[in-house]
Length: 201
Image 1 (spheres, rainbow, N blue to C red):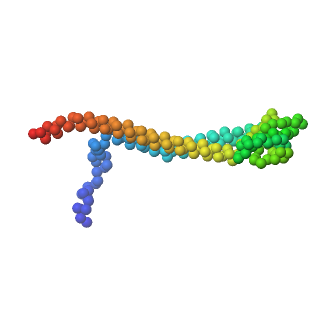
Image 2: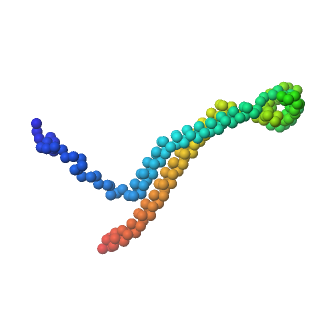
């Protein structure tokens, strides 16, 4: 076997600790290192922080909405009411106002204004939601709506956080570039007279 195939054929390879250390690139500026570290930190936030923040925000919104679902479901109930009169020309494209009358659980007759579907005829029987005080109100929040609120809150958190990360990245780059240009101009002011004098000779 030829000993020329390896520079360490005549003896053991020296340990890595004896090798010459790597020399830093002299062209890398401090601002370049700062930008690199900022980019890495923002990447960690983008990959790890935002999903976690979105999950926490979505879970908090869902739990809050679920609590509202339980409270409203306990405080509100549907009752049958008779339509006494319908207001003319008021929001007929979506809902229309109507005077309705119903009897509550205590036997008392109540009258109030409620929003009903369009083209509801007078004298018709409709289902309306009332609270414990007998006040006409909206239908309680549903669990499906609570889930939707959770997803919406989580999505908005992630989107807002991502926009913040990219704005921070752009702002850092802008600040560092201004500093680099200012330093470049200052160094050029020192070098320019030397080059001008050289060409005048």
